[in-house]
Image 1 (spheres, rainbow, N blue to C red):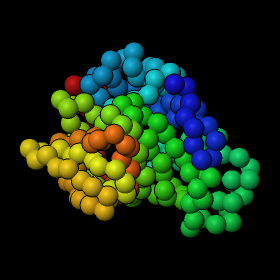
Image 2 (tube, rainbow, N blue to C red):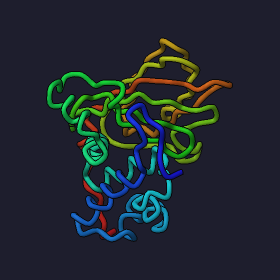
Image 3 (spheres, rainbow, N blue to C red):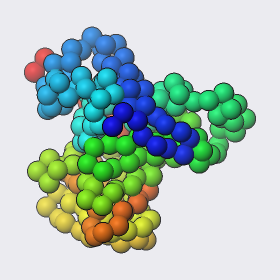
Amino acid sequence: MSAVDSPGGQIELSAYGTRLRSAREGLGVSVRSLARAVGVSPSLISQIEKGRANPSVGTLYGIVSALEISLDELFSETRETIGSAASADSRRSDQTVQRHADRPTVDLASGVRWERLTPMRDASVDFLLVTYDVGGASCPPDGLIRHSGREYGIVISGRLGATIGFETLELEAGDSLVVDCPTPHRFWTIGHEPAVAVWAIVGHAGDPPADFNS
């Protein structure tokens, strides 16, 4: 998939792939070193940077953490790259509202879509509307995600499975939860309809820099 459909139009995967490549090159890090730090193959990093592959949630978290950038920065750069003049005028006139038509949206591997809800760059929080397609999951069962910060979420529709450490939960519309993100965790759809949740992730910028020499 080379692009995703969003309320504001198509967002090319190459837009945030270019942002990731710029951040990597700015740190003087090779593709091979970044791949080793994230735990994926160099070819996958290269494909993501070229907009030819969707990363999983866990892989994207690993990349942005290793490169010391936030998800919000990634969305902001994508938005600035592809935003229309009308959207730019709207943002200048009203920085407190996120218009649905301007919402940056990225599809990830394994049937997960992220939509950024913050109206402007805010490195202190990642505020996301997340849709998990039928059969979708944030990561494979044997590859739980860990990162710094804390996630606060509420399920808007559908049913969402959650593994947090050694605990497995089933969440329905209206249920909310908090996750200490250093605890390994995973989310997935239960049943035959998509699950939709709103997440606020705070403190993610506290991830330690990756050791590219290890």
